[in-house]
Image (cartoon, rainbow, N blue to C red; front, side, top):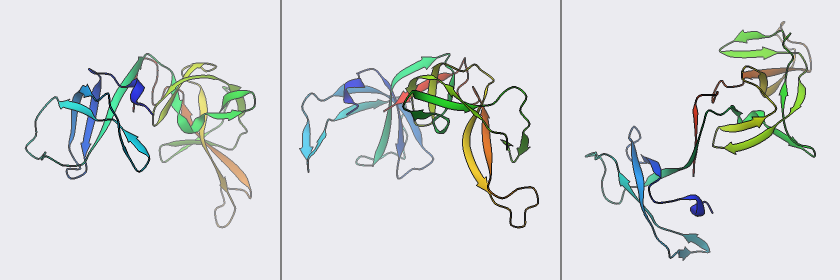
Length: 182
């Protein structure tokens, strides 16, 4: 399905099942033009030339290749979990600048209610989604919402939702590159 985006010369990252601590970069060297089909699945062979050699690699080893089909530079991005959709399009939940939040275990949390902010999204990879418009660097977005109930914890109230926040740009802020692997 992603083959149409793969081109000779693109960079790739290779990880090996048998050597868990080994990651090697490479370059797409060849893409077969004829497919093979097995049990209804169509496959194309893509050959990747390693940038370096390693004695631990053996012929026939299982390998996973992530081919970088596009890189966007200087993007504003949020975690994929922050982006939601409704009938009007994509949105994120944000807070006003007067937010009261608590930092615990490297997470910023609040019990205040967020508001929906419409956004235009661009490219996405396995963890980040590009925000083309609708947010600015430094905005606080909800990346996850958890419910707490009062059992023995005196700091929570029954049925209260607690939002876990992330600063826009915290994982893909402007100035960083956003590789799109396939």
